[in-house]
Length: 152
Image (cartoon, rainbow, N blue to C red; front, top):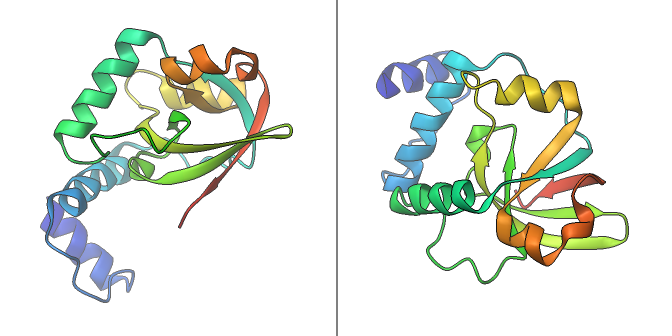
């Protein structure tokens, strides 16, 4: 299926150079493939509100994406982890701004279609969900309006 996706991207001119063959690129392509097939719609998230993950979902999700090699084992360079709408953002770094506060974060999860996550984010005006440990450290930002700027 990935080969079909790559051929389709090449056919429409979106892919013009060979991609590196490494596990992170491969996993991102698999996630991108799932989004092309499953995504409800494009979501314009110039800004929105913050929610938070509980401890068990945070720990499980971090372990899962670390095992896949999509996020680093050492997350100490970041103020926290965030889940966003776009699954192809997993592993991307970003600056999350809440009022006058700025946080360096890494994307560790995304909104799902099947579980209603995408609809929940759109209908609630949510930009991101912060991981449990960021919530513990910065509880005052949950429920606040925020913006995000990716490092790419």
